[in-house]
Image 1: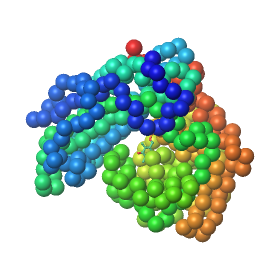
Image 2: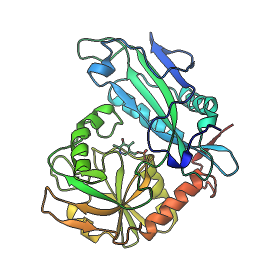
Image 3: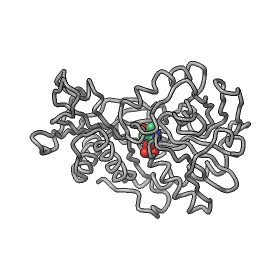
Length: 340
Ligand SMILES: *Cc1c(COP(=O)(O)O)cnc(C)c1O
């Protein structure tokens, strides 16, 4: 095991030993290659640099008390990445290459997979980029698929504590018929400035609304949104949000716990009716929301936690999901794959 202060890890990059790469050229994928460099030599006219032809993923591997390493729902990440690839005309990566790359990057960096009980995990970052040179606006004919890994701590430094969030009304991260459903860098570039302003104002994240009417909740920057009321888990249905695998898993768990699940438009005013709210994604798992403010709108404040504690339902959902990920609870839905 590496000499790392696991408990103090932030959600950031720590250099590991190896990453894996695979190149697409002349219509075929090559062999998986191992690299110890953390740079990529690239043509200056590569489409990823000029026209944003790139997609990424994020998934985690967890070391259990039994010392076994579990990867959470990688097949869903593969499917989503292929959907992104189709959406912005990139070569599709076969499932077996995706899984071999996940396994290899974990096996080669085994010592960087955090010990059980530290709250840390090993984050995998698959990346698919157009590397072929084009000056005209066209899809590339060459691609690089790679995965690197890095040990990470919690996404929000507060950990599983309620965070405060601001509704953004002077910017959109994705258009209703745009690329919000794909995990592509362009959506993130589009959200950097508004995200920065919200942080400067002292909030942990931005809450985006539907771009067309500014009436319904979309999502929280890099995390989906859910609210709880009347024993129901409610999460937005929108054509401009990224289908979160964490959210999908929480919906399954909520139903399994006897809650009703609704995926539908959520008007901003409905926030007043929720007893709990949260942001969910691989990075944060669940970030309970303490308060949502609408400074740019009617100035309303929606308060969900007064005592600095997460709500009961959020706590239970969090415990079940983490319990499955760390191998402490039954993997009832077959979400976990082992890496030896
Ligand atoms: C990745 C991402 C999420 C979270 O998805 P998970 O699969 O749960 O990690 C949510 N919103 C956006 C915009 C994302 O890019």
